[in-house]
Image 1 (cartoon, rainbow, N blue to C red):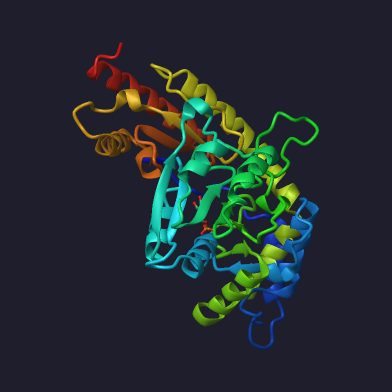
Image 2 (cartoon, rainbow, N blue to C red):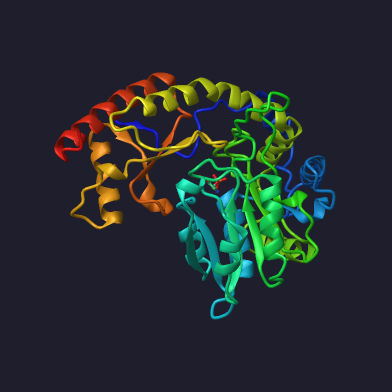
Length: 381
Ligand SMILES: Cc1ncc(COP(=O)(O)O)c(C=O)c1O
């Protein structure tokens, strides 16, 4: 049986507080299901705004927060609102990055331009590199923090340095996808699972900062159709109108679950991280023990490890084709992984450890056999 380490969603139980809140929202319902305003239930928007304020984003108010039917919907709404076909419609994406962005940008009429970062630099985006990469047609700089797939987390100081550049380009928006904000592994014993620093906590004199987040990763609410955008007031108003025109409100039971989860976000995130910790150690140790020892860094966030298997690529093929072939051969050997080529890094594999421990152990065994056989075939040893 094929074991998947490729899913973007963990195998987590729905948090009890969220489940209870959703059930309660339906219990004893005599009339129709209540429908909130399209932008989301006022109490949920207020709770999210309050949580961002606690995290240092003093300016965030309920009216800046829009609840969307999933994070993909949140991203697509922002792209569609701000990208102008024929005008400034370029999205600059430091890579490696999530494979889903390309399709969302394309369908919104935008152009994606990749800015490759190097593992040797720990995927650091230097302010000078960013400045050089920005062009008049660049409308959006898009980051994920923590990054999917590398797990790299931008610190508050790194944000400040990058925003020193973007502030010189007032026509530019900075969009931070923070869906993995609560899946963090830090060595700081004082705050072991503190959420990743949010872009919203940085000064925004030109109203350029937009955050997209969701409930399907850090809050274990995959499948509940919940995402959110926090945007400067004028853009938030446009996003609310857009959602009224195209979708309407997220169903009440999901919003009730979201409200309860938001109230317990820190505890839910910390519990997920504690639950993930043994599998994280297992995968890190398993990768270190592989023949040829693929390069990877122990990631600061997310439940993925992004490892460099490029030494196993068929030299006769172009990198993207070789990367796709390697992933397909691994699947034939019983392990499904995400092809790094789809994230801007051919030859890398994204491996999730948010799976059952027994599956992870068996996947590692198969991976070990696969890598050893591959080494023999291409005579690396
Ligand atoms: C960086 C990133 N953004 C957005 C999404 C989509 O999230 P949702 O399930 O809430 O639509 C994912 C899912 O894999 C993701 O990894």
